[in-house]
Image 1 (cartoon, rainbow, N blue to C red):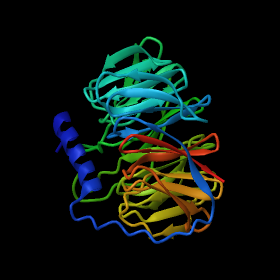
Image 2 (tube, helix red, strand yellow; image 1 turned 90 degrees about the vertical axis):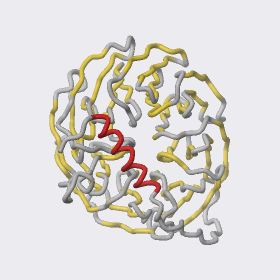
Image 3 (cartoon, rainbow, N blue to C red; image 1 turned 180 degrees about the vertical axis):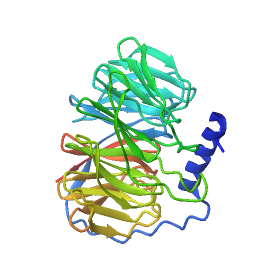
Image 4 (cartoon, rainbow, N blue to C red; image 1 turned 90 degrees about the horizontal axis):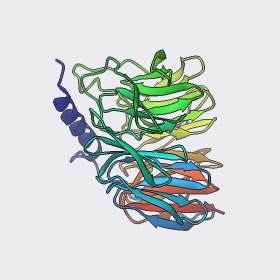
Length: 372
C-alpha cells in the first residue's frame, strides 16, 4: 500500500517521535564519578533561540554559522564567539543551516527556502514538501533534500530552480536529517538505504550503493533511510541506515567498502582510522574505517540520549541529553573528561574548529571548549 504525502509525513513524524521518546525507554544510566585524565575548559558561549530541529554548524573563514528555531541565522567569530552578523528568516525553522561562507540557507516550517548573503536576505522560494535536512550550499548552488527524498537544485544568486530529481522511494520516511553532501564534482544524497551519486549540474544519476537490504514484514520494520550526518574522509563516505547498518562507500568508484549490522537513529562521526556511532540503546561502537572491524564498544552511557560523534586527536567527543559533553579515549572508549553545558540535550554532532570543540544545545547554547 502506498501512502499519500500527508499520510507519509504524519507517519514519518510519528516514527521519529517513537524512536526518540518511547515511554518505556529505560532511565539513563547514571554517570560514574570521573577524575579528569586530560585538561579542558570552556572558551566562550553564545546564545541562540531553542534548537528544535536537526541543526548543522558550518565552519569557514574563521567563523561558524548557526541557526535558532525562531528563524534567526548568525555567524560567530571562532576565537571569541563574537557575533559577526545576524539575519532572520521570519518563521520557525525545520532545517539549517547550510553555508559556503558567502551564502547561507535555511528552510522554514511552512516549507520556504530562504538564502542570505552576509546576513542580508537574498531570495526565498516556496517548496512543495517539508524539509528536515540542512540545505547544502556549494558551487553557487543550493541543494535541498525533501522529506520525500526528492533532490532540488537552486541558483544561489537568484533562487532560480535548476533541476529536480525524484527517485523511487519507500512508502515511509524519517522526519529527521538525511544525507546530503559533496564529493569532488559529485553530489551525494541518501534515498532509502541507498547512497546515490548525482551530477550537480543536472541531477543525472551516476551510481547508487545500498548499505544493506531492509528487513521486516511491514513498511515500518523495513524503514531504513540513511540518517545524517554522514562522514566523508577522502573518498570514503560512511553513514548509518536507520534500523539496518553502518557502512562506508567509496565515492570515487561508487562501490560499497563494508557494512555492519547496527540499528540506531543517529549519524556517525570519525576520521580516516575510526568510525564511531551510538545505537538505539546508546551503546557506543567504534569500527575500524578500513575494514569495519569492531575496535571497541562502550555500554557505560546507555539510554543517555547521545549526540553524534566527533573524533579528534586522542579523543571521541559526544554530548548527551543532560548537556554533558563526554571526551572518550579513542583507543578504548574509556572516559577522559566530562564538561557541562546548560543542562539541555546536545544536538547534532560536535564540530572541531580552530582547536576548539563546538557543541549546540536544545536551549540554544553554543559552547566552545578548548583542550589543554
